[in-house]
Amino acid sequence: MALRTLASRKTLAAAARPLATAAAAARGVTTVALPDLPYDYGALEPAISGEIMRLHHQKHHATYVANYNKALEQLDAAVAKGDAPTVVHLQSAIKFNGGGHVNHSIFWNNLKPISEGGGEPPHAKLGWAIDEDFGSFEALVKKMSAEGAALQGSGWVWLALDKEAKKLSVETTANQDPLVTKGANLVPLLGIDVWEHAYYLQYKNVRPDYLSNIWKVMNWKYAGEVYENAAA
Amino acid sequence: MFYGYTLEELIKEAYNNGNPLPEYNNAAQVWNHHFFWESMQPEGGGSPGRGVLQQIEKDFGSFTNFREEFIRSALSLLGSGWVWLVLKRKERKFSVVHTQNAISPLALGDIPLINLDLWEHAYYLDYKDDRRMYVTNFIDHLVSWDTVTLRMMRAEAFVNLGEPNIPVA
Image (cartoon, rainbow over all chains, first blue to last red; front, side, top):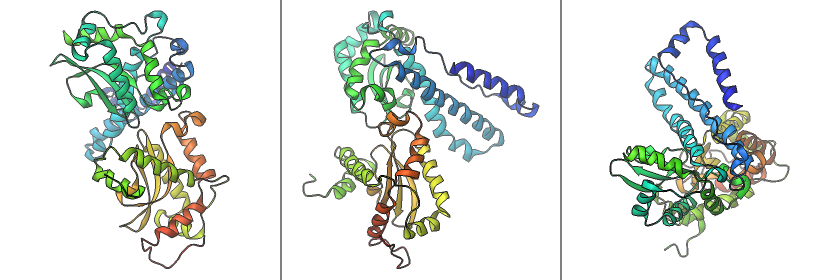
């Protein structure tokens, strides 16, 4: 699959690299790889179609990974040369593609087939914290759906935990900005992709329908685990 | 608040120097889309008319350079937005720019000549994630150079391009 192709290509490239650049590689650049999905592409149907999941993973996420790795290697070369303008210039590619990789890696874990418990509301500590900070689980779902629908252009809507203040909040970020750009203390519990590529083939322009169906495959168990680790 | 404004005036005013008022997005997207429909024609593409071509050659070196710059700019937009050919008022030259989401060069004081929608909804059903193929087909087969000629004639009423070299419509 995509992951394997990427890995073998990288190994080949590394083997072919002359000694001088092998030294540069040894010094530091650790590239990232496209993670496998924890379920089949079609496993989230009918909430999200298999075609969307396949393109989203194999094309979009894979492109963020490839472009992030490319930017990292360019950054490494620029740092080695002390080329400050290039180091600064690369920041937007790193933020966009690195953010795309970070965000999608979280997103895949946020979803779960219904047969495996997707859509089951949160229990225990996260469930209580949601009641405390939003009034009820339904109120949180309504708030995230509304803010996701209102987001202008491409971006993400998040359920965030401020790990210092121990408080939950709903945040939005533009494009592929990861949640950390909204505050260093914010930990993403759930992220919903509201780029059109995440829903257009199935929902066309009706983003609110996508946002109402995605809750049926939400992995609250994962969000609860992240919450308990971060809030501890 | 904007009673009696033309759409163009409203867009400029509601852009509010980069802190858009709530009225901005929908107003600008109406204008941007209307402008986009007229930027295309069946069996479009090919080569621009003489006056437009001369200005492109003057400002980009060649039509090929312009075409490459248009595609490069479209592909380097991160997220949703538009790519444009504009006439820069102050510099009095053509330029390719891209803008995020609903931002229009109108609001920035420049005169748009072509735009292409780069929101994923504009191409996803036909091209999936292949934005390059979509942009290439637009510039090679869809763009209406007749419309651009008319827009350039109008623009020359506001911007002196140096020569009384008005293109023939």
